[in-house]
Image 1: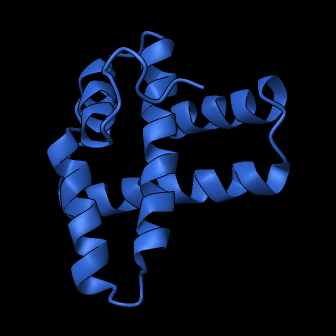
Image 2: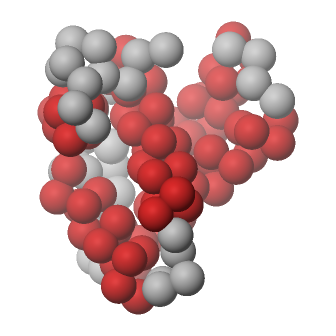
Length: 115
């Protein structure tokens, strides 16, 4: 997944013009998800990650990291949602998670996560 994260970071920094600190923060959030998936024996390849995996991670943040505020979890989810939207836009087989994350956020599936 590292290659995808690097490409997404490049896109955010160069194409979208996001500040390096913003991109770094987003990358750290997606890397945290990736570490959680690996540590819990879940799939880490983007086309194998499910919205259930992401929900489990958010639950873990809530239950195991009690100092993680709602705003922090929402920020982490925003980064993950953006990453999966980028993957889907690149045709990298993340459409299902992208649609599920958009639906969970109350966005229309065809617009979910798009800038």
